[in-house]
Length: 423
Image (cartoon, rainbow, N blue to C red):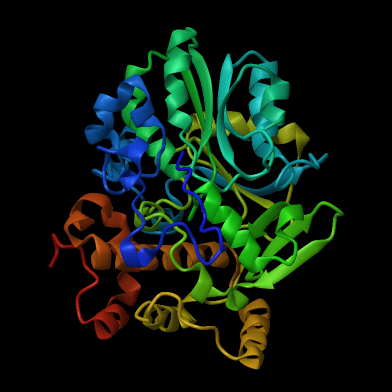
């Protein structure tokens, strides 16, 4: 993991978009692709497979989906959410107070170990003495899995533990990870010699290095040192829970982007799999109402996983309201603004936040909106910073998903939205 040090005066993030935030410029990561999320594959004996497995060398989403499902995505929500069999709104009947949400992910990992369905679970814990600094964990007991509850939104080299899996003769494994980690895991899956692999995916966007996370929290919170959990919520605001239990909220529109621009690695800004579509079961939140989690069972194994934890779940209803397409032309236009633009006046921000909560997309429509916005932002980033990489790192379904905005995109950027192979 990158351990860049913050400026002693706390004047800004440890990396910036103006200089392109390449993790691979760090000493430990020399020789890796310019776009590197430090997934851990190159820390293992599988390093030689990097050129044929890395999502940032060549995105293989379509090929892996054909292998997993025997088909391509349907021209509906699957283009945004990925191939799935069923989806639910759910939460634990007895929530884990240490979890980010109700604890579905870690509870599921613990159950797999309790019932002997796996011998180990690769997951992400917090480094000693920290709440949010990611540390890969090879859990062999239910208690070890449960101890990793809670969000750690930092880059984590979880795949480096694959060597330990092989050295310890583990044949039945569960893996909990982010979309880039899952992509690489699927690419080398056949070489691991496993009898059973369960892949539980966490939707992921814009992870950062730990120093940049510390800096981010100092800029958005009145008490960054006491934050226990935080999440970007469906009501267009950041919720932060503190040690004393009180919640602090900051509207997205109120973020000090002039101070924050540049904290996100280039790899995260060149990723097109926010919903973690190559796992067996995705457990997130953005398609569900406040207080619920959004669960997508993608494979037969994913359905098995859901049925394993179902007796402990309260099942809710997935809803959808609003019209994401109304605001998308404005969002596309905003992508032309320079990074770090100053915030609008206070009263304008209050009005925007009110309208977002009152009239904004909710439920599944919120998920569609956020996913499309990330696709547009990241496509624009790749085209502006790494244009030669576009054909290799942008999967075809991105252009298909964004096609309804093609005319607006051409008007704003003066070029087609279509992929290079179609131009």
